[in-house]
Image (cartoon, rainbow, N blue to C red; front, side, top):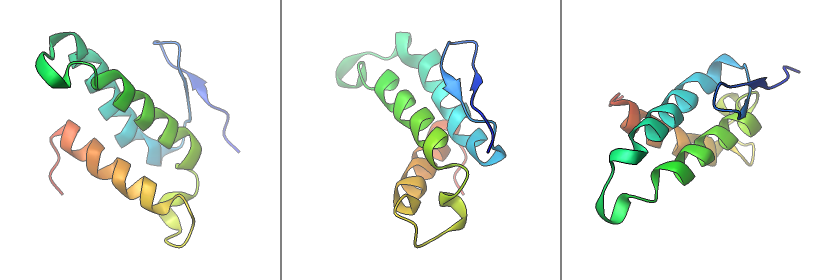
Length: 89
């Protein structure tokens, strides 16, 4: 199994290619967090953390196994990541 790499932000990240989309979205949210005002101001960092944790925990299996318990969570995280990344697939 691939060991998580240490990101420049100090977080541990998996190196599975399937995690890239979620990790990019987490990075974008963290970069935007200081500029977000109003009721969404406090959401960027927790959502970014959730995307990273989902990528770390599920990238090696969930995208490939529809009947695995983490598959639906992976699908949800992917939809969020694509919205953050501006990729409307």
